[in-house]
Image (cartoon, rainbow, N blue to C red; front, side, top):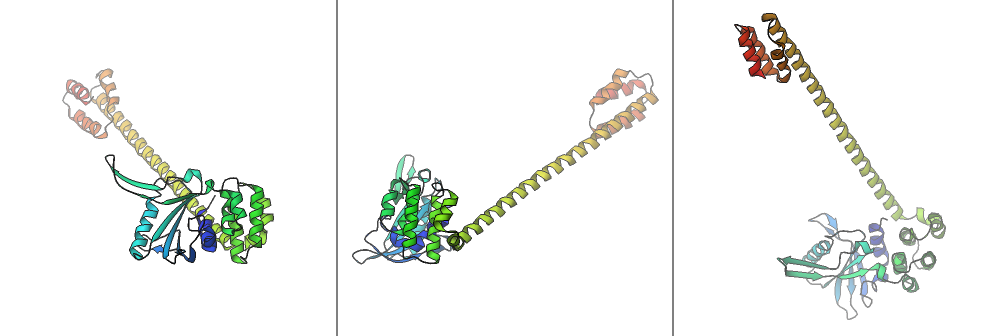
Length: 316
């Protein structure tokens, strides 16, 4: 299930609804940003600009995690360092949100040397499966309702209630289409596709920019897979061509050896017909073309049969 883009889009649309989930229920949302880090050409998931109940402005970094990555916590640490350098005047809160139990690699990053802890940092963590789906829908907050299929106790009936809530919310047009589409993506394991389309509406699905993004992403993924398959096929064909060329070279070499072997035997028999067959038969053990050529030249110069027999014995 593709969740990265829907989660970011949900946060952009209904960030205020998610503040209770992020431990900032009393804060006021000032703005939502997706910031690019020029040094590494990547983007932070979401940075919320908040104001506390006492009027203090601060940043809330939200990092969604929907796949297993044992090095995941280094990512928000890097983002935190960059944000701190860019905004040293502002407090910065960090929340990591795990979508599935299998994604969870904890919320404390430690550095140890020979068993001794050098430093550690702990981020606030939200584990969606520990939150109650019914309570999320009952909150009346569309942002939490959209996440309800990922929570404990999620069911098809609660998905329908969430869809009804979204349809009755003050979100209209593109935002509503996107929220319903995100709900459908998260609810896919709970509700049949036909039922989801009926609940959400085909027009709303087709009108969602998120669907266009996901389709483009899926097409790009398909293109990458196709390129990878073509590359593997080309590599296999290249290996087969190389193997055929090696076989052809080997066959040519064997043919050359066989031809020289016959030439040497003919030379021995022509000059010294009484040479024992056992001495001539040893030629088959010589597989080097140059040795056979040298042996052939020596036999042609040999003064007698004894010399030829010594040459054949030495050649073996």
